[in-house]
Amino acid sequence: MAGLTITEKILSRIEGRPVRAGEIIYPRPELVTVHDWYVVNFDRALQEAGVTKLFDPSRVLISTDHEPLAVTPQSSERQKRVREIVAKYGITQFYDVGRGGLGHVFPVEMGIVRPGMFVLAYDVHVTNYGAVGVLGIPLVVEISEVLALGSVWLKVPETIRVNLHGKLPAGSSVRDAAQKLIADLGDELVDYRVVEFGGDGLAHLDIPSRHTLCNTPIDIGAKSALVEPDEMTRAYVAARTDVPFEMVRSDDDATFARVIDYDLSNLSPQVALPPTPDRVVEVEQVVGKTIHHAFVGSCASGNLPDLRDAARILVGRRVHPDVRLYVTPATQEVAREAAREGLIEIFYAAGATLTTPGCGPCAGGRIGAMADGEVSINTGTRNDTGRLVAKQTEIYLASPLTVAASAVNGRITDPRTMLGGGA
Amino acid sequence: MNWIYRGRCWKFGDNLGIDGDIMPLRFALEREMNAEVLAPFLMDGIEPGFAAKVKPGDIIVGGKRFGQGNPHIQGFLGIQGNGLGLVAVSIPRGSLRNAVNAGLPFLVGCEGVGDLCETGDELDVNFETGLFRNITRGTEHQYDPIAPELRAIVALGGWKESFHKRLAETAS
Picture 1 (tube, rainbow over the protein chains, first blue to last red):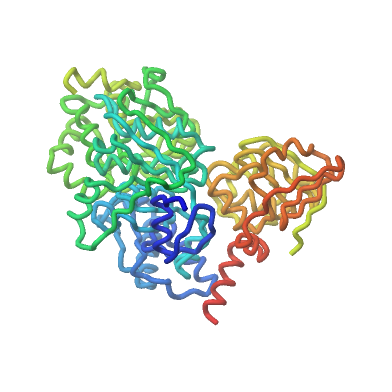
Picture 2: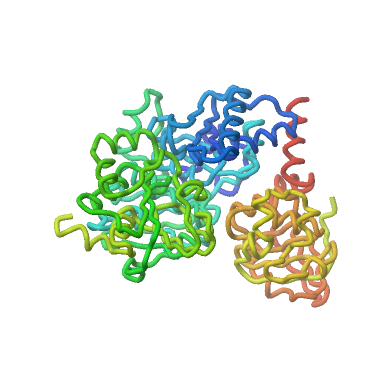
């Protein structure tokens, strides 16, 4: 009998028996996460069903990250409703305004999620937890069923193993790799499959970088993404929690739908063209395009190394007079570290605008939106037409280095031209 | 529930978008969940007037990645609201869940189905066994039906009905 993948092992532990890809099961998650924009909706669905108690309120985590800064009467009202609903159901893990930040990121940072855990969520980018070997799977309406009954059907997904090799060259970052990778894998291959990262190239990618790797595959239809935990994972998580955890790795003879070797050492900066994140080209093909709006942040690229990259470009420079640049640290902790390191000072000196930790403009442009006729380059997760409100717009996605360089020049720019020889 | 649909074939190509092609996006943004409201707008983006031409029991034959895009359920509710069945080469992750959630009888993983029929052919499809028959051509092909666990949800009418049934069973 062939060995098991990480995904099969995690779900087998949850089920208490060996399960394999293709089986339909009802696994009970160890954590369920929901963000501020769906709490009122799940409460309505539960009320319609006559549900008054959650399956386990201590396993539910709510984060106010999509709209932490209430800028309309409706959003203040919704925040109030969320607080009432949290209290009504006795949900203890509630990270409200100013407490945690982006719910796809801070649970990793705080050691709330640990290698080998199984998480269900409302919102697709729960896959970020895969940075520390967590299996996070998103649902839509069925999250209400999970909250009430503790489970919903799940077909155990197959896995695509991606072995990373080499080290990214100067001027390229993990965002470039993550974007290029989904373009190269393609939606047909990843559909309903988990993308599992391994290989010697991981040694050069820190935990925040692994968030980025695990963030992009879901946008072309993957079931989830995770990184095989290694010694870096162990050290990172052990520093954040006293709860024991198991480093779940795939067996050598596990059955993968495909095994891919992926070399990072020649990767140049990549830009995703509108209107989908997998329309990826080399930066050279779009250099010179005039921009008006730029943003560094989101669950894809709002961690400390992302902010450091932006600051490397912005230090001693100014954002172009025709461009507004928003910077959103993903979490309270990222913002605090950025302040301590002096990054915030660099951003302000450059003429950037800082926003409160969370999703930032990426959450549908409730803050920092675009107007018709404008072009944005940003590090958000998606570039669908109208993602940042106005429809007559173009949104390009790129790394923090490329976004910051473009913000300085007012045109899409290859960041390698601004980093100097030793960068 | 009746798993056997006999009616006309309506064939579409690959990569039909759930938003825009199969159902106007505005219904997703309005979170419209009433299949009767959605039914008249089915395929409005690619074939206006489509809903007026179909009859209950007709079958949509889709290609690869039927219902691709941000997984909104409205398009599948629209198919179900017209009393149609669906046979597709592939359906992406989120949309496949939504086809089940909408209580839609469907077959998926039907490689080559586009070569077995043309729009206007009379089809007879058994969604419980996976038997696909083209009456006009006098041909048949055996596909895999969806898993019995998912057929049970479809038979109940979809996600909400299935959820409420599980709740009742848990309470008793």
